[in-house]
Amino acid sequence: MTAFGSPLKVAFWTSAGLLVYTQAGYPLVLAALDRVRARRPAPAPIAAGEEPYVSLVIAAHREGPVIAEKIRNARLLDWPAERLEIVVACDGSPDDTPAQARAAGADRVLELERGGKVRAQDEGVAAADPRSELIAFSDANSTWEPDALRTLLARLGEDGVGYVCGQVRFVNPGDGTNQEGLYWRYEMWLRGLESRLASVTGGNGAIYAVRRADYLAVDPVMGHDLSFPFNFVKRGLRAVYEPRARATEKMVPTIEGEFARKRRMMSHAWPIVLHGGMLSPRGYPPLYALMILSHRVLRYAGPLLHVVALATNAALLGEAPVYAVTFAVQLAVLGAAALAGAVRARPLLVARYYVLTTASVAAGLWDHLRHGTPAGWAPPEGTR
Image 1: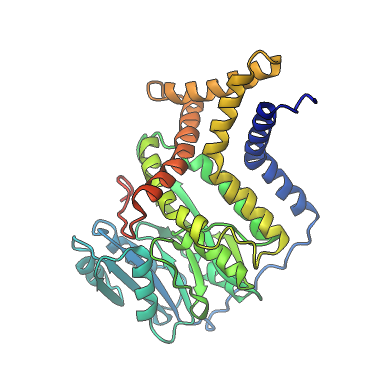
Image 2: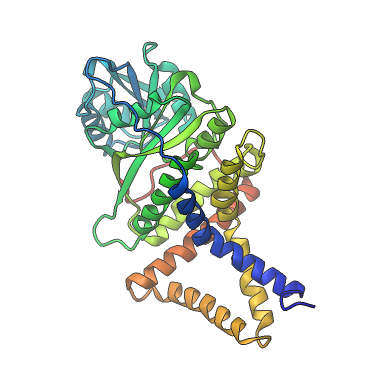
């Protein structure tokens, strides 16, 4: 029997190898492909005086503290005011969000029964000005740079592009412990590589746009961030990332709060993975199929892979010195994460962030399997 022949050794090295590949190997593969692939030409800018009608849809639930500022920010975008419609779709808001939106000058304010963010977006698109060929979407707490809309929509002028998301930068309020900014910079680097090579595997709700004719009405528990990119690819369109279209959002202040946010997000992501068609390779070009497997399927399998790696590693202690080393590394990460609750050192906080956000993937699956995923949503604490 070979050194890797026993079932325990096969399970350990397979799970450990997939974890390393997902976090480090996959980015290196993309970076290597990016160096040899021909670059696509830059999109032609939208000339002044040739701007099409656009509707900006903002789904809002309990957004009274920020909705007026969001509308003021939208009015400062570099786009003719007479060709930009602001639609605020209020998803059963219990506060004064509708009144605040009207007072701030929204063109259309919808007061809807509570049905979830996706249904509010559906209603916003349906109610938008019939002249609007393009539909942009934003979160109520996102601040767009003045040229963001123009830069974002220029990408929709490219042949074959059906979905464009921009770059969102998360700002850590006060002296928070959340390390989302570090992870998000890594994620945006990956997204840029995926976009240049083929299509992105995930978007974001802060800043994105589609052609009205291509808009998809998806299950209300399945958010646009994850369901739109792969569905557009299945329809023969590219889903791209435009880093020059920039927005900022306030992040959840604490790592524990980020765990709760990601747990809720994953409860919405798992229906897409399990029932929404993501796992079906039909319609995927080969490279994009590899991206979905590497960036989504293996990433979401991370909690299981970690459990298998730790359990089999413990059983293999004494087999060879390498197993003592790998076991010590795993315990060190878990110990650092536990210690970060008392010692706020950056390396410990990064370890805690990784452990908790990995656990949130499993927690979201548990929530979905135990009681389903509700369509309703609410702003995370500390982000408004």
